Length: 365
Ligand SMILES: *[C@@H]1O[C@H](CO)[C@@H](O)[C@H](O)[C@H]1NC(C)=O
Ligand SMILES: *[C@@H]1O[C@H](CO)[C@@H](O)[C@H](O)[C@H]1NC(C)=O
Ligand SMILES: *[C@@H]1O[C@H](CO)[C@@H](O)[C@H](O)[C@H]1NC(C)=O
Ligand SMILES: *[C@@H]1O[C@H](CO)[C@@H](O)[C@H](O)[C@H]1NC(C)=O
Ligand SMILES: *[C@@H]1O[C@H](CO)[C@@H](O)[C@H](O)[C@H]1NC(C)=O
Ligand SMILES: *[C@@H]1O[C@H](CO)[C@@H](O)[C@H](O)[C@H]1NC(C)=O
Ligand SMILES: *[C@@H]1O[C@H](CO)[C@@H](O)[C@H](O)[C@H]1NC(C)=O
Image: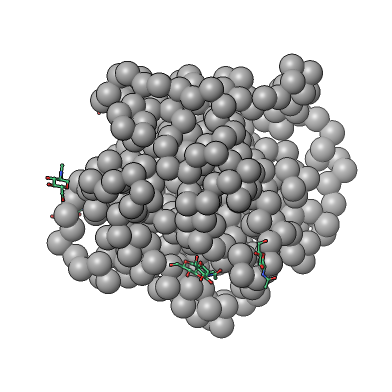
């Protein structure tokens, strides 16, 4: 995909963005600078799970992950970049590194706390992931380090200008649908997930955050693995799963409006990820893609088994020729091409896609 020359340039940038000290600090203008802090799950993880004790289900640091853009498995659950990488690009920031990258302590441009497999509930894959609450505690540590470096006033400015991108919840719902037939009703479970998410948003706000980009739950029932596990056929999405996602989306939308009234300076972009992902999966050709239902990498019918890379329970897998024709890279996670389409719409889409603000406006405010 990327030409060799381009990859080389990218690698140089990568190294400098990962803290080989450079001149960026000297030309930094706090009042014009909007950093990017990222919270969430595998859709946003840029490699934090490479540094925790977990299982191959929650890691993507082996081939063929990363095969197109990076030419090595960086830990991202995609053939290439994930959404926060592409948003950083639009915002003219270096790629946000994983918070757990050893020795990394340069936070002026923000940092990424997301962890594959994580949920808003601490019980979700407990012990194998960095749950959302722990991600918040890491952010608080970062704010203390910034205060020591810049002083309180500049840190307040930096944190208030920054954008906080969050995607969480699908793992909570996948656990409740597949592994743990929950003792809770759907309504109660959604209230807990959204309740824990809004608690964390309030925690970020209390630490100084003001501008939030939050994704709607995707069309969960249409994810190939969910179809495999819950026995849907190729064409039909699993209604029970999508219904949970819709319930979550409605409750979260009400909560975000409440936060806007409660919290000083609170601004948000709520992205209609449900509709966008549903449309991409069901009408891929509208977006220049060829395949919305079958995964690029995996095994079984429509490559719906989560075996990409051969390090998980199922060892054999097939790999498609051209990931950029596909919505799904493995049976859960999207390709870079999908991420590009979504990121572009998150960045500059109209109010029916990202509202009340799109990310471009949030960054520029
Ligand atoms: C990592 O997890 C495995 C399996 O749960 C455990 O046996 C091992 O002791 C853990 N290692 C560390 C360093 O925590
Ligand atoms: C799974 O269900 C049990 C009760 O059956 C509960 O104690 C546990 O917290 C649940 N786990 C999750 C992730 O909800
Ligand atoms: C957060 O989740 C826990 C379960 O992990 C639940 O007991 C608690 O009520 C939730 N908090 C909110 C505010 O919903
Ligand atoms: C899948 O669905 C069919 C028809 O509803 C049913 O007969 C079959 O047992 C199901 N298979 C599994 C694994 O749930
Ligand atoms: C979120 O998802 C629902 C589907 O449940 C959709 O109808 C709604 O418009 C979405 N977007 C927003 C911004 O709420
Ligand atoms: C979501 O999609 C449905 C049908 O695909 C459409 O009717 C609805 O207007 C869309 N919602 C938004 C907020 O775009
Ligand atoms: C918003 O953007 C979408 C996709 O680009 C387009 O289909 C839709 O018509 C637009 N809606 C409005 C109100 O401009």
